[in-house]
Amino acid sequence: PKTSPQPGAQRETWSSQAGFLLAAIGSAIGLGNIWRFPGVAYQNGGGAFLIPYIVALLAAGVSFLLLDYALGHRYRGAAPTVFRRISRRAEILGWFKVGVSFVILTYYAVIVAWAARYALFSLNFAWGDNTADFFVKDFLGGGNPASANELSFKVVWGVFLPLALLWVVVIAILALGVQKGLERANKIFIPLLTVLFGAVVIRAVTLPGAAEGLNAFFTPEWGSLTDGKVWIAAFSQIFYSLSIAFGIMVTYASYLPKRADLGGSGFVAAFANSSFELLAGIGVFAALGFMANTQGVPVAELQGITGVSLSFISFPTIISMMPGGHLFGFLFFTSLVLAGLTSLMSLLQVVSAGFQDKFGWSGRFSALVVGIPSAVISTMLFATNSGLNTLDVVDKYINEVGVVLCAISTAVLVTVLHPRLGHLRRHLNVLSTIKIGKWWDLMVGFVVPAALAGMFAQTVIDLIK
Ligand code: PHE
Image 1 (cartoon, rainbow, N blue to C red):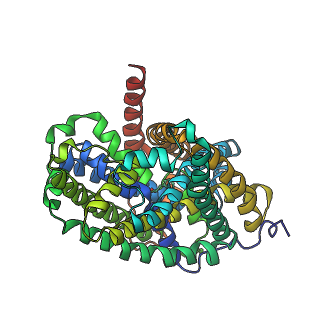
Image 2: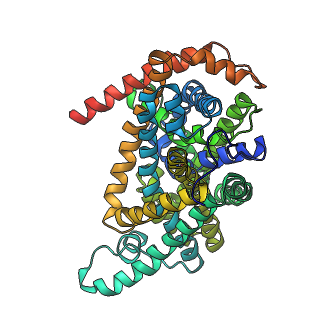
């Protein structure tokens, strides 16, 4: 039973528009919101960063989100199918997006698995006093080769096992299908995440020193507004955070019932994602303020304020220092797991759906055939200490190069090579509660690609310099 119904048969659908919306929000809200946004905002002008951020959200974020929805819903397929239906030669662009999603998922999964292990570590502060040493040496098995045997046992137990379990869960959810798997999982995980993370933020802002952290986070550095890098940071944060231009929203929108309010959904998803992101910024910086306060250093001198070191080195320190830390830690890491898991599902679905469409496989078969090798590759590349540096580099290139290339090439395709914007806008507007005007063509066809091209040029120049 490995082939799906023949072409022309019904495509799987979400049970309702709300189901789609939750899944779209689940994909958008991820590690990027919690561990990437706060530090990026802080390093790029603090409160002043909100200006490029909001401009990027409204100009690029919303318009490209709508483009993805329109493409997926109009051409009803995974990314390669959608682009093939526009032009046979464009199929390759779809596969490029599948490839980028695949690269992201290999490192994304590992972080989610680490977070799961750390949720349990919170219960007994297994990380001890030196959280950095613990993470790199004890947990990931780096450093001291003399005790390699003992360490590798720990690594197998602590890192490989949770990762394997995570993969079983993700593959199982995908195998259950769009409604029974993805939709149901999101309906459980996203409300749960909102409650748990809400509790984390409330606790964080009531810690002593929280105000200092928030001050540091929100104090605007207006000079940053003239720095191109800051604008690049805002645009890539928006693209990554909303999961746009990677084929994800194209794939998810292809499961919408024929009658759907695409415009309204886009605005809701974008608003929900950015609200969560701001909330995360507040929670994270309140907690960092507490750490600075307790250690008697200014917030500006803190190390480890983004990414891996924020979550696995700074947060454990904060958790150990605070009253009620066990519970706080458990909730914080569980939130990371829930946020990451729902994004990971969407990433794997892009790859799986690509193959499903191409070879006529069933969803279940495809989830297994695509999921198992992904699990193996992600474990080999990133699960241990040696993958740590690669992880940062890959994350950086995905954000600065991959995203931009995906977005620009899509825009050029539907604007210049095979003009479809008017058609897609009418498609969006059929059932939208929000009418999309001609401004949209201008944004997608000109303003955003031009801005991205300028940014890309600057990235390249910086790389060469
Ligand atoms: N949007 C997710 C986040 O913010 C990450 C992601 C990127 C998920 C691209 C899917 C695709 O973490």
